[in-house]
Length: 272
Length: 331
Image (tube, rainbow over all chains, first blue to last red; front, side, top):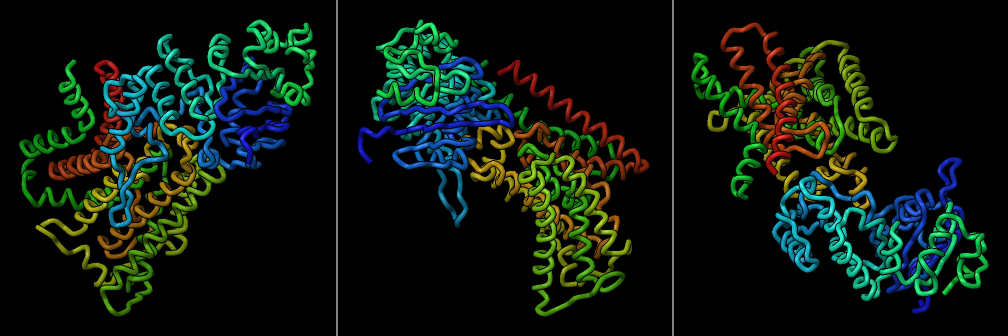
């Protein structure tokens, strides 16, 4: 595998739910160390695409190539094992458990006594405390159940979780929806820091300003297909909004793209 | 509020059922004649055994966010199978072999296997077919009881083989061995729930199954396992019942489901899933039988027991809601 090969490559990904076509042939790539913002209106297919990348369900057709190999993830467990971490919009926390249990969900530190795995709470708590301290997140007690924490604190736990566990590709679905101004700024910095470490990042967001602040490239989904794939320094928020809302015919597409709305060719044409 | 005070209130709220148990025992000891004596307490312990063991499995399934209505019938089936194989009168086949110590072991394994199979079937329909646990286990509640009647022809098995029955007659420190078995089960499963990944996953799946699935936990397998565990424990309860009654009748254990449910709810397990601890469930069982015993001692007609237990369940659920509110207010 060569370095110029993208980390993640999607080819003609489609997804049907009965008669509904959620995705109609999505092509996109993410390279190592690159932050790609995935934009689109409600119902454009962003969340569906995220779930396919995360292994929650398989595409109806198309190829998902990760690290040069075609993958068929049967479950999020497999995607995770390959190095894809996902932070979902509707938080993936168990509010009936404490911070430590959530942070380590599925990766608990255990020690075997007579063959029986026993949770090492003290050790896990120390690691969480360290991760929270590094990220500057203040939580009254790591032993308090998540249901007693604010939305911002919950999101911070999720973000710190992915920073800690790393992986090769991180998918963030509306990660800042519940965060305040200062926390969002810190979150954006965190994304840049993660990418600088050579990890590919896909960020889904509604907020144009955030996308331009953090992303190297912007991919716009519209009605289940890629409507534009642009470098952040070669476009403007106005053009992107046009793409999102379907104003492509007004010629506001990418430079030299001619505003071609045909999704099948879009990905290749604007390849960087 | 200071953290220390908050911790105290949390602790009290979490262990309210123990507090209730102590208060109830104190009140009964002072007001009910002959209540305060060792024999009575040992008896409460022993009576709690069968529902107690069953309630552990039920609580685990409920904490995982489901429901198992079949535990009572499953226990009856295990008891009937044990009774039919190893009893010498009635429908019993009177199987006996040497060495004698092997008989309780073999009969126990058969009883656990019977329970495990029912649990496995329940789990299959819930996790693989995607049916509602309420319907699946309600169906099992009915058909498994039907199977008990069918295999026994509605008759009973008596005179369980002495090498097995001896377990029901032994004492340790004046407390029946049967009671110790249920205490042992509670200790083991309380440990499993609190300290092992399996227990942790049960709680997490009960809280948010999507999140656990996304975190790479095989949540369906956890749920399925919870049904098997409930079945195996119901099987154990059935085996203990067969020992206690020296055989089995076709209607053995009728009504135990209600008691187990009451104990689980009183013990602080929320039917929403994800909330509850097994020591609390044990306190719930003990509380239930403390009241039973008091009613018996006072010579009240048995149907009063049902009314009081019904009221107690209602009170427990009310308390649960109240606790939630209080917690929101205080924390």
